[in-house]
Image (cartoon, rainbow, N blue to C red; front, side):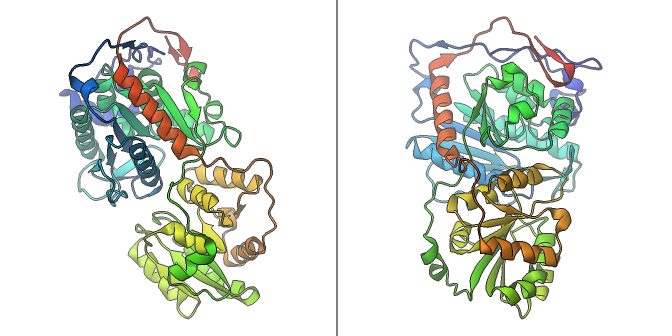
Length: 468
């Protein structure tokens, strides 16, 4: 469905704040981005004796922005593995800025491009993680790397994770370059992005709605509409809603070790119940982990337990040392990372975790009871997810404003006692297969079609902006 974005009063689309950092990609000055509509329906090729149509294997390019987290990269890795499992000759190139590089090991036909890392400290506020450069300089470097990789790789499908225009608009030159190619553009978003008012304001001011309307063919939502109806919550216009497909929650497709066998295989001999605490990358997990360690004496006085605390690779070393000091003499093991986190989840009687997407849905997949303590901010995403899941009886939750040793000890003891009943349907955890299937379908459509133009349609964007 082709649309033409008409800039809101107050400046051209190229003057939107999200694209200022890319100004001199065009050789000086703010680029004038003429967004005249996503390609019209493609007509079938009679034959493709050479070029992309003659290639064996479908090509998927994934862009994911994770900073010091692990969730987006884990989800992208699961989708890449599932995509390749469906096409022995396929290939996937993942573009990511995670300091860990790639999470995929020993999978044929996958590689990754590491971007210089940037870190988000608040809505629209980013800074370089390591390089002593300005954010403007790093964004320019990242944008060029993405553009060069995309045009050289020539993907059948570009899967963009979370942000339609990339971090601060860094994807715009790439989207523009691929716009008149057969490449299918797909946006993948987790179940909840942030508070609706925040998302509508940021996406409008940064040009995300315009990018979605102009460049994309499909939106895959990694969640269930009956839990959180993302396009309605974020006031998407009807023409954008028609691109949306809810896939269910995306989980790692690897098999899970049965719980009664997992602990011995891990070399663990827990005394009493086993409680595993984890929080993804761990950059902001010290408050939860330290409170849990401080609660251990009260918990063990009522219910004997052994604790395994997985701090994550991005927890500051000073915070990690503080946890080890607090845990001295207690039945607590502190580990930075573990080779297979899901085996620890499977071995546990209870998981205490923050409410990030991947940790939460992986725990649901294994079936271990969970107590979620969402982060306070800057995003409301985790609080919204924890409340929605707890309301359905899938997890227990403790609000971060109530995080202190006594209340956390009570929450752990209640969760170990069980008794929560699922309200309504269980979570739909089949998202990885459905999303990979949609990407394969998009790749086949890319191979079979070419671009053409047609008159744009008219639609309304949030905030009163008109497209058409």
